[in-house]
Length: 198
Image (tube, rainbow, N blue to C red; front, side, top):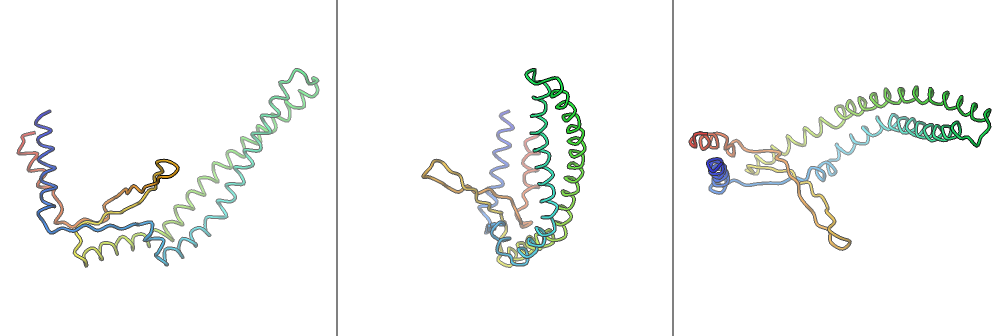
């Protein structure tokens, strides 16, 4: 356990030490703001939403029908089991309940198929309209980073965290969008690990 801690410390020292000793620079990009300010992307987003909105609306309508049928089914179920009602009334509720159950199952299957089709449409439309521009944005980040001699670019995604009614602060989550090959410390870390004999 002690050797593992020493190896981890040495690896961390190698990483931070190498970065500190170099003239490396770090940049940050807010992807959400970048895409919001990218006019071609915003135009493509409108096309994407236009392509999927009819299917989304139909899916929402089917879901509403299923919810209404479920509510009716619960009402009929309580009627068919209600001893206060006449035998004929309970029999009529039982028949209506069975019919509604069959319709509910059929509509549920239709909803499932349509939901899968809608998801496929979302994926296809995203690949057609949005993905090429997202890739172009990422390529442009690399180009700008290289032009400005930036070795590491992280994505900043501010998330507002509300501590209480009066105090809100932003937390930044980040992913690496670009890293110069000069920052690759893999071989150094391997050497440290192997030197420790584990």
